[in-house]
Picture 1: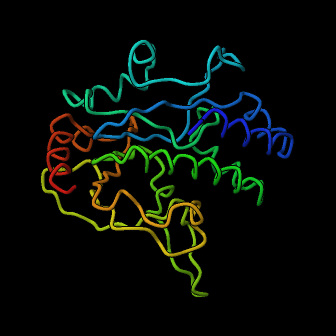
Picture 2: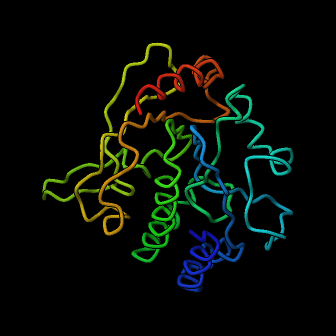
Length: 240
């Protein structure tokens, strides 16, 4: 899959269709990770954009390895949580616009149908990437709803908040106190899934998912540690 080509087509399709506030973010273009096939996949929500950053970067891709790793503060924070399992892990942001506000997702969503479809097409691309990588353990740092965690059936019988549309089984792992541990059991049978017409069966059945956070306000006893990553990794390897 040519990620750059796919994103270029999405940006071209939605250019100049948004309010000035959102268009300013689109004008920064997209940035994407280049994850390799590893047993552990860490996911974030979108690349950052800081004051002074270039609107157009020398390149629009980055890797969870040298030299990008040494210059990325976010990567260094993740590294502290992984410990020795750093070598078994890679990283992916599930959205590709550049902004520091995690809540900007809602700003785009509220732009209407084209805002939702702009986001959905990015999530669809990310889901295909994750399926191709087929990791044993996924650590979701932000936006669990994107995975289908908050999907619900309305009184009308229709699904809402489906997005990727994975189904989950909650697991009790006593050593883990930094979030919720689940096992992927399949896909929601709904046309609301972003990949409903391209992914009929998931390769991720049995994959362990930890829904956690990287918030700096999180209590120390609730933070992900290298020891907990190791427990989950060993557990995940027995599932698939």
